[in-house]
Structure formats: C-alpha cells, structure tokens
Image (cartoon, rainbow, N blue to C red; front, side, top):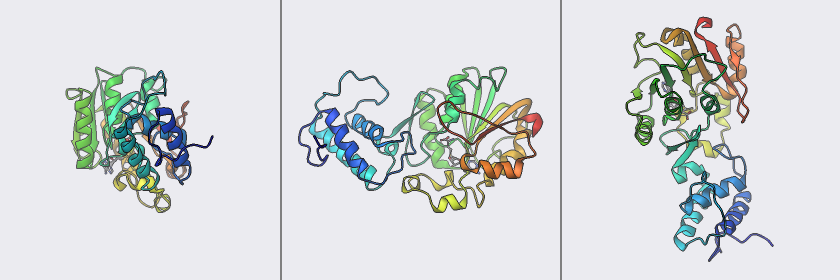
Length: 297
Ligand SMILES: C[S@@+](CC[C@H](N)C(=O)[O-])C[C@H]1O[C@@H](n2cnc3c(N)ncnc32)[C@H](O)[C@@H]1O
C-alpha cells in the first residue's frame, strides 16, 4: 500500500506518521549531516519529537494514536525540514552528543563531532591519566567541554568561544548539566581570554575549518548554522594555523592537543606534514581529527 500523504492524514498512529513523513522527505533533495544519514531516521526523529517522545528512549509500540495538535506540529516541522531545509535539531531544540542531551538553536552549530567517541572512551590509548585541567577551544554550545567534564568529574574545564551568542547557549547547557562549578565559559579569540599561567593536560578543539571552495558549494542545511562556526579562509586553515602556533604555551609538558579539521585534512598534511600529527580512527564514523603531543609542537 502506498504511504499516505502527510498533509492529508486526518487520524494516524505514530508508525503511520513516520512512514508518511519518510515518503515526504524522500520526495525532496535533502542533505542529512546533522545526526542522521537517511530519510527514515530523520522522519522518526521529527515524528517522535512532535509527539513529545524522546527519540533516545526505547518505545514498546508505534501504534500510539497521534493527537490533532501533535499532527499539526509534525506537519509544520516536516515542511520546514523539507522546504526550508532547516536541520531537525533546530526544529526540535535538542540534540545528543557523547550520550548527553544538549539544548540546540541557531546561535551555535549542531553537535556532531566524532570527538564524541574519544570522550566516550575517555581518550583511552591517548592519555595515561585522567586530566585535571582541560580546554575546549571554539566551544560553540559547549558540547565538547561539558561532555569532557562528565567524563572526568575531577577535571576543571575551560571553554572558549568568540561568539557571544554561542556562549549564551553554552551557558544554558552548563546549567542544564549542573556543571557551573566545573566548566568555566570564556569569551574571546582563541587563547586570548587565557594567560600562559593556565596550563592544560588536554586541549580539544572543533574549530571552523571549511575552506572557501567548500563554503561556495555548501548545502542549504548548513547555511542555517552560524557562518562563523564553519568558514576558515581560503584553505580552511585560518584558525587551525593559530591553534598550532600557540597551543604549546598552554599545555603541560606531557599535554595533548586534539583538533578536528574535517575535509581540510589534506591541507593540514600539506602545511604541517613536518609535525608528528597522528590522524585518529573512529569506530562510529568520522574522519579528519588529529592528535599531537605538546613535545612535538
Ligand atoms: C565548528 S564550531 C564548533 C562548536 C562546538 N565545539 C561543536 O563541536 O559543536 C566552531 C566554533 O568556533 C567559534 N569560533 C570561530 N572563530 C573563533 C575564534 N577566533 N576564537 C574562538 N572561537 C571561534 C565559532 O563561534 C563556533 O562556535
């Protein structure tokens, strides 16, 4: 039986809403880069959230009747996702990173860094002891810093961003996770809000790294995110250059720097091939993250 048109559904179950939503999304040219990679998962995420059900909780049955109000919210979200190309997390207002829930809105990028896997594994095989001081450079809504604080309860975490708006969102997330005593938010350009008296065991950064050519071709979904979180000059290395130039001053002697550079991996290898960069592998997908020891900087 063909799927029903989502805009003609009068009464339906959650399962029927997901099927109709999937069929509707599949009729549109969409890019899935914000937490799912296909129309079915995206439809399930939207439909569950519209029905007030957390997409990460187990659900016994999809035969739940959808109310009129829920159907109307779902339709509007599906339309915005398909036609306006607004990423789902911006519609629903939350996303998950390293198993933790974060508030999300257009003030910061939607959390999706493969660094989540490293944090989840507590950087095992890369650090010998739990860090006591860590820095999340370019923290956006705070997901990396807050997740590190969760993973290492005795570690003080500083989180820096140049965007006042992003830090306002990070503040909401710090409060949501009750991390006010452990995570300090600082506004400024990379290391400038810090003094070199501050030394970290671990600096982790997911900075802007999209080069000018990729920015010109960027999919509409990503245009909803702050440009300042993505664009990093002609070769994508404007920010990474500065991080590599100054990180050593803020690391303890056996400290570690981890930076995501995504598609700019080739450019990094070309310019910094002389450094001992270790490109990390991920079991759950993702690429373009390097690690370097302070001694090699
Ligand atoms: C790719 S986003 C990453 C956000 C977050 N860490 C994550 O993984 O979702 C990069 C962030 O860097 C911030 N940023 C851009 N230029 C910066 C600079 N010069 N100093 C500090 N933060 C900067 C942006 O505001 C944005 O929040």
